[in-house]
Image (cartoon, rainbow, N blue to C red; front, side, top):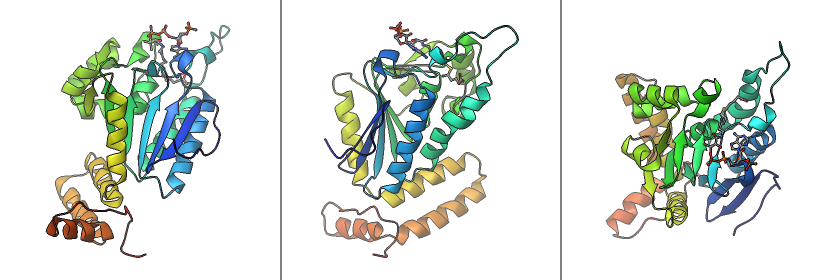
Length: 273
Ligand code: T3D
């Protein structure tokens, strides 16, 4: 166990071996999201972004689920004529979390330990690498309660699985198994239940000893490619390679190759000490 930072009520945060692990921690409600949890997640992501010792984020859930999306306990039926403004919760609760995840300049892994439904599924898919235990499932459950996919679902799904599958998943709201999610290219890997968490931690620790700046430039370039044309992307690659080539880690990578040893990367941006 590593250091603990701010005390949170609905999530756990641990930092060790360069990995910050955030665990959604309302297992009795399958880690359904409350405004308190979303606020704590945003604060924890700010802490992580400010901590230069952290070189990978691992997001997971406590208990048998990853996250069942919005806590519906906060959505009791209203009297005739009154309605919730659900954009408010998205703009002020979910989006600050998603924006911080997107801006975080380190690799992010989501270890989906169990069911990921609604916003829970789409928060998972907002991470750079998604691994899931074989008993986990992904459910775009929104249509079951008359809502629209949110938290980037309508952006990420057509891009990862294609329009036909995105429409099937969201309009029908059926559960997708972790192994189908892997076969469809929606996630990186489906792993056996008994070795899943150890494998996710090992992957996170491996990334945390990697050339962090180069990895960051890589994920930024891949994310940008979704909105760029070919020539713009070639220009971005040249600029990214210029920046990666200025890092100590590039010098170390080449030296280690020539000396037939494993590289020791600092993860720092430039050659300036
Ligand atoms: O509102 C806004 O701000 C807009 C934003 C919306 C974003 C969204 O995420 S909308 C989608 C909201 N989520 C759902 O509709 C999912 C509801 N849950 C389920 O459909 C099922 O629980 C699951 C398919 C996820 C898992 O089913 P199962 O059979 O494995 O578990 P369960 O028995 O249904 O749930 C276990 C407990 O968790 C249970 O509590 P209890 O009865 O033992 O006290 C259940 O009520 C609770 N729970 C599960 N999901 C939620 C929840 N409690 C509150 N909110 C939930 N979303």
